Image (cartoon, rainbow, N blue to C red; front, side, top):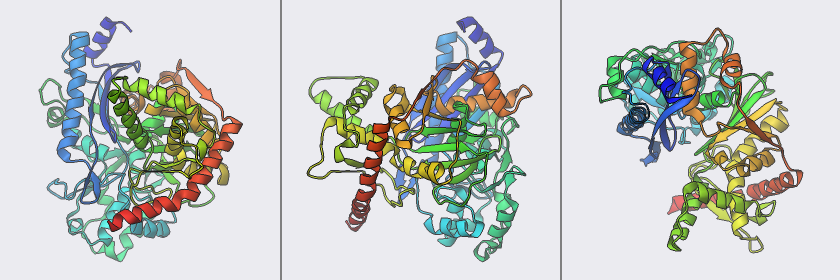
Length: 534
């Protein structure tokens, strides 16, 4: 698309803004109505451990959003000679789940509790039993119920509970809503009604410790919306929050907010039944859209939905690429000590390429990439640890092969339940995330880990912000199509992709690595307990 046509679309507000608040980066993208990204901006941030709670301060939420938007607007000015004054539609996405609790004065009563916290074990066990439905530790209802069990003082003043993307959308529109995919990480959803499960709401309300409060659970949860519906419009106050310079006008349509899982499904065209996607970053998750019911409740399988309400089996792991990044940073420091400077992408490529020369089982090395606790393997606290025996082959190639292996290990353990126990079938499994920017290596490792073909699209680096912008365009004009058809027939018409298939020898090597991983798990658990004693 030429510069003049892009400028005309921006001027006519034939655009959508997608903002995603990820674990390590907030990113904003401006997309034209033909789904092309024409400007972007970002902000790097990190969650903080505050009194044993993983959180992000409220001021950084808005600093990050405003910085990302300002960079995007500056790019529009520089590239197209335009002030960004009007946007057709806007969509907000964020890391899923967690807990933001507000009182009647709209004040946040306790610091935002992110998905990374695994502090709700008692609540999840009791709620899973009560509902006969898996309630993961990061879900909003688990955080609320744990706060009740802990007799936290703020609970009595609860008026509204939401997630990060729901919070931002509320502040931009004044409307307390969220998309159904995000809502399904707050409280179980009824597939038939596309709303919170009424029977489970009643069971929760009937608990004596819950009934003691004046509020009702159905009143404190946000309204559930489907993809394509309106979540309100950008108010003057919201426009000022987003763009303190005052250039942005109010009135943009807001799409229902979604979690990063939902935007990942959209960005990989994986919302139709029997499709699946895997998103990797600080955390990792797989999403498989079901065409059959699960045989039983599994503690490591979350039941959520697509942005248009179809049931999804989700495997979520708290840890993925953070430890790889730490090791790459170490080798970058070593290279600089030698007077060698490499661009980050070059360094990743060199080290990933080295992994290809490693032994299929990683030479007997085992790595636990746990910067935080990991629910899949029942590890309470983050203790990154490399383990080797005296006869292990400690080479650079093996070290980075097990870095990739370890990044996918918890995901593999969870996915084995779907693929081997439940015998769930998928027509396609599409992967996205920064690890796949380096061609082939991580994609092949994932295919071998799961023993299933993995497809990566050419837009693998676009990710959630772009997926959220697509949902915003869908809300503005769905072109009389359901979401799956819209993606197939409008968005991904000419998209190129590459599929890699498992290599039998590498599959056997990964299985041996996983056996070693499970055998070494007591050492990881012991390390956590020992450091607690210190």
